[in-house]
Picture 1 (cartoon, rainbow, N blue to C red):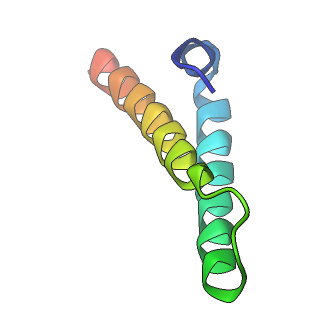
Picture 2 (cartoon, rainbow, N blue to C red; picture 1 turned 180 degrees about the vertical axis):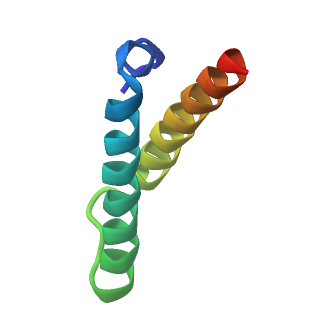
Amino acid sequence: MTGKEVKAMRDEELKIELAKLTNELFDLRSQAVTAKVEDTSKFGKLRKDIARVKGEQRRRTTAKA
């Protein structure tokens, strides 16, 4: 997910995407505890995507105020 893709999303889509990404990160963490994770770089990618979404949400809330 790129910054341009995040900026193109609506507010509702950002909320849904954030929930999806956090659930995916939780599942990956639990998988790391119970089984071996095949692609460990996915941790960093998910965290960066979550940061992009949260950053865009923050920019929008401060722009409205």
